[in-house]
Image (cartoon, rainbow, N blue to C red; front, side, top):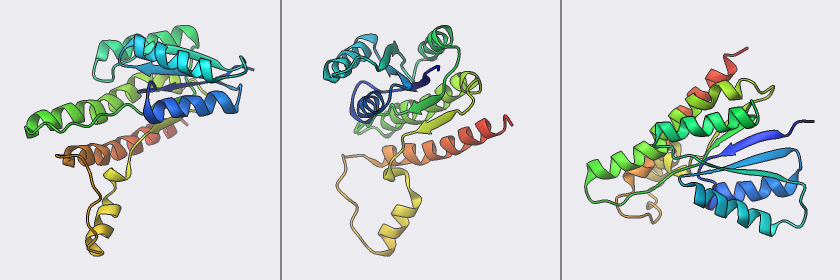
Length: 192
């Protein structure tokens, strides 16, 4: 049986790395592709996962993928297409925060990585996802992008939890990412 091929952006640390570790430890049915801004970071994460595993039955690859670089995204897609021919799950996890005091600089950096990047990655990898019999397009968001949470906080007059300085751009990016996720899921359903 062919493995379920899963690509995770920003998989060299945090949630992406944790997801990789869980998938490789729970089943031999997955081939996880660790994607990171630099190949050396992806390979370091791959080595870390391999060092923690006591069995050798899991499948793991590393690829360079910078969500803010179209050529990098295309190269990663070409790698997946050549090696596997399809993609079962795309986990758009890469994200950044930015506390720059200049609003334009702050918003540009965050929106490029947290919104535009995942939208482009989803679009470029969609043809490979559509070759899967059961594709998943997952976007790692946050409660920071929840309108409902903010409305409840205001209604109950609760203080906003502590956050980094100039954190508003991050909130906006995650709200926008939620809509991109919704649109991406609809596009996968339209294939029927």
